[in-house]
Amino acid sequence: MSEIIRLVIADDHILFRAGLSELLKKNEDIVIVDTVSDGEQFMKLIENQNKIDIVLLDITMPNLDGFGVLKKMNAVKTNIKPIIISMHNEGNYIAKCAKSGAYGYLLKNADEEELLKSIRTVAKGKKYFSPEIAEKMINFMSENKISSDILTTKELQVLKLIAKGMTTKEIALQLYVSTRTIETHRANILKKLEVKNTAALIKKATDYNLV
Amino acid sequence: MSEIIRLVIADDHILFRAGLSELLKKNEDIVIVDTVSDGEQFMKLIENQNKIDIVLLDITMPNLDGFGVLKKMNAVKTNIKPIIISMHNEGNYIAKCAKSGAYGYLLKNADEEELLKSIRTVAKGKKYFSPEIAEKMINFMSENKISSDILTTKELQVLKLIAKGMTTKEIALQLYVSTRTIETHRANILKKLEVKNTAALIKKATDYNLV
DNA sequence: AGTTATATCCGTATTTATACGGATATAAAT
DNA sequence: ATTTATATCCGTATAAATACGGATATAACT
Image (cartoon, rainbow over all chains, first blue to last red; front, side):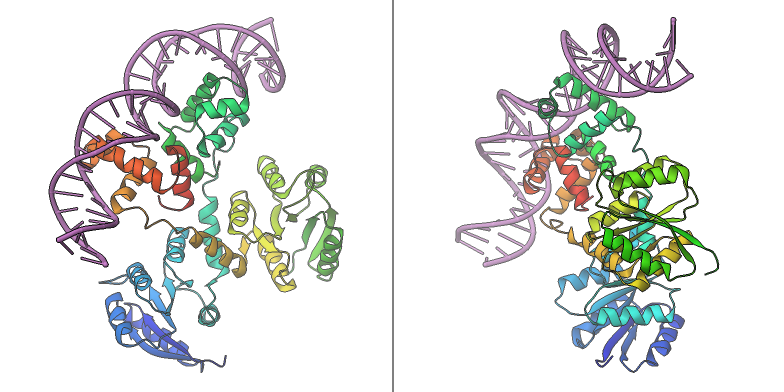
């Protein structure tokens, strides 16, 4: 806890910003450098002021939202580590933030302990995603698990080879059957998964984790 | 801590099984119903014995591995909740397990606290993935963010429409350009992503989260 | 001023994939 | 014993995708 953590809060809700400041102020190792109410203000801030370790970043903000900030920060060279604070708990959002360079993701109803834990973990350069967030991600990822038994084993085998980029002819050779057989399999697979062509097939198959 | 948690360990490493048993035995709310050394044994066990709440499941086992067990358990009606214990910390594995119905995922070098926490959380019917695991998943998800800039915006746009199952002709109509233009785009996309056909393209595109 | 990247378009040809309408053998299920 | 599902195969035909070879206009970068 020796090092001082310099922190900025970017959130358009005044009360939330204030409450968060008060709450963090109590900790000797954390200094609130500034608070801003939208992404543009934040970007202006970091142009002049680069002694910032962490920004607590809201997703939904006017002018420039959290995603926008993440994007711009990727372009600019900076070592400010963003932690997303959001009401959205859909795995959708979480993955998107992670990909955009977020170091953490907190729900607004997270408790103080969780908040401090994430700040201190991220300050050390490590990413932190709470078990609760992990659960959301898991649920998001495991939603799509239907239709793994509507295909026969042969069809599934063929599907996997298609996904590897093999043509009908190549598959037929490898499986020691006629190309017509594979053609029939393909037709049946398309029908069963209710798609019209290979592109949609592979999209669906990967979405549903069949390949 | 009131309720008794009935637990089975499925792992082919004798010492690990034993150690785990000893460790868990100390807790009054946990009872080790049995320990087995492979998936087949476990499946036989649950045919007769259904008073099991949780199984600690190793991924790599002889005869029938952890994935196989998860799969079979999906088919059979049971309320045994599996927690994966694995040496693999690749997000790859974790996501696969989550999709196959795992309630938790622990690394073999997790500490006692973590283990108990996950067991008790899962016993309550909630899923539990440790922050460490969450981090791996995040890293895994954000690893594949390459090549989102090797495609031009137009190419990316076309790629997304291909993934939706649209044909070259349909895409051309929608974008008010010639089919030849879309053909060229397709060719360039294939070349850039180093794939030979649509199937492999969509596979790679989804893997790398481009669509 | 010259290169590079992007987006657009075309000809010719071949290869793959899809559509439609069949068939047969086998094993499992009722 | 008959139906059902699976896996295999074929003819004919069209649609779509891929492989070559080009080209032009524009904007951006050096």
